[in-house]
Length: 577
Image (cartoon, rainbow, N blue to C red; front, top):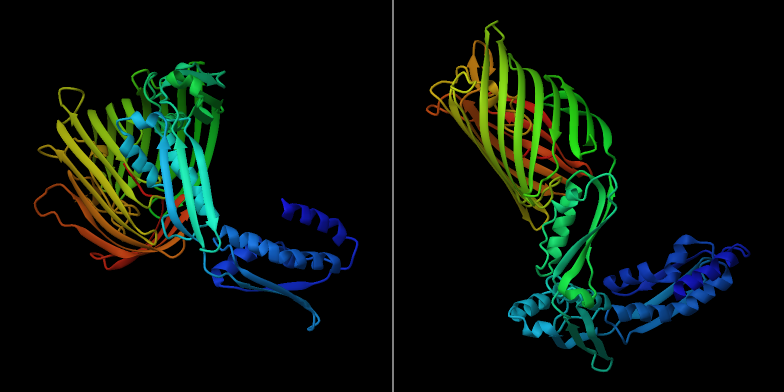
């Protein structure tokens, strides 16, 4: 507050008198000098300018006291501080010499938790969890910032489960300047055990309350758990219906037996049009448009339609998704048209898919039935038509620390599928496909990325099986060094899909700056129609990584071992399926 008053007094005076330029030189250990440079008024005004002679002398006069105040927060309570004002060189120089002396260290810690928690069977584990939040230990330098963060961390650890109204009952730090010691005492009063009560929702106008209620993971009567509140909030934001959502519980001890869960939401725009352009070395320039209506027929039905065009394909998609029901399931219906011309194979697909999904945080289960018809034309003029009614079950587990720019964690997906020739299908087949990625962060300066893909179509032959269910690989996000989907089965001069897929990749990223990194990698994989004789194509190279605000951007130069040539790759993000 004193700094603000001083600044307020200086500004009008500076406009009435001639400016007196000056500089500040602080003679102190590096860590202390850095703290003083960021907090002293005289240091800030030396860079800002606009100070006259009277104001300079006032700043100079108050500087030693402010130095002592700053040093006290750093654990130095008996520093030797001197200041001089030198103008012999024609420019004023304020010299501040600081001998901090020995820092004050924590000599004893008295920590206790009182209240109803003492009768809790989990008391020992709860108190131990709170102790782990102590940022100060016996022998540490006593810094005010560490003491403040310790108190807040310990309090939050007690509040997180059951004891929403926990408070600091005693907080003392006894400083002895002579012995340079600090005795700290902290007592937390847990307060009563809280249980969740009724749901109180505000902000709904367009959508029914069931939209919120069906996303609620909290059961009335269950003990208070802050993680459930955060989970509820994430589900609301991920639903697509709301622009913002805040979920809190009342921490009034008078309501401990049934504390209300208060949900404050702001509904998002019901209708939206998105336009986008992009580029990748796999597919070239891309343009797309998407329309979404999240309140179709005023029933909270999500209607969407999109078109996308790039160098290799054109696609149109339309879908209708129902809101999450009381059991947590989401039902949807989608129609899709896709044309692509890749590696001498032209495909025209029409499909209709009905699906049911269930998502719990970072785990998803999805059942789907899809009817697909396909027309194939190869470069030599041959081709045929195929169709299948395909039933599938998919599981996904996403344990990545950040979906846009992950540095640690794993992703795993598994799909099992079946089509039978007695049900609108030209050839019976079964299908298994799995994708896995594992990221290991090495103390934030490096990341190791392991990636693998396996796929198999079980049938006597791939004939009459739509290519949408077969495999090709190669390109920016699979086997770098090879053209997009150029690895597969060569048939009549074209590359077509095979029944088996295998891809593996190892990548090391060295982070030069928090957002910039350099990578080296080796990819290996292929698609084939027989397991016997399967030969992996190998690509290796180097790349540049940028963790941009819109996601990870990757620039790679890779060499295809089999082709003895280099290829440039550009991609955005990591691909998870």
